[in-house]
Amino acid sequence: MTGTQGRRLAPLRLRVGEAAFHSMWEDLSVNVAALGLRRGETVLTIASAGDSMLEYAAEGAVVRAVDVNPAQAALASLKRAVVLAGRLDDAQQLFVQGRHPDFAGLLPRLSEWLPTEAQAHWQAETHLFERNLHAAGRAGRAVRWVHGYLDKRGVLAGLQAMIDLDDPAEQGRRYVAQVEPRLFTPLLSTAFRHPGLLLLFGVPPRQLAGIPDYLPVLRAGLRRTFSTRLLADNPWHQLPVLLGYHGIPGHLQRGRLAQAR
Image (cartoon, helix red, strand yellow):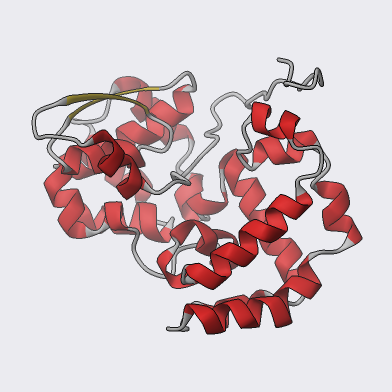
């Protein structure tokens, strides 16, 4: 694969049986609005983490989800099975908390809705829910790295305090004064010139090829995020800070899951 400036980008290689994404890092409500979904319409979507599948189903769509990575298909199949089985409390534990006290015991109760291949996958991967699903897989490593960097730079407490703020302007002021100076170090500058790291964080290859220095983009994006959107409203910014969610993302709330069912 070659970028617009001729720079060759190394292909991403997945470990066998490893999910790249445990959650969907995009605003599903924007997708729904853009699609203008009507009840009964059929939607074809990449399975990924299965979150868009649940959101579209909750809108009344008939969803076909496909993925080149069997591990992603297994994760989407698990979310589908838990919802169809009506085990909404288990869904909260599995996909919001990222942990389950007896995932191995839950699997047989899902066999009616879980394909054979997905059953085999999760029988071999029960440990993911004994630890933390949010810290698993390729995206999970990225979350752990960010969390570790934030901890090392001494800004975790400040970011956690921002989650409870009601005023986005105050959040922006605190970010610029207390967090940003600690974040943007020579180490970060070096890291964000590494194409592999940026690909890991989901930067599209063509976009990466067209932006020789991504650090100013990151700086401007974080300032905009912290001054216009509350950290408490953005579950994807919460993951590397908390290694989990501060609240329940909209598509995983009981009402939406019941609609998806």
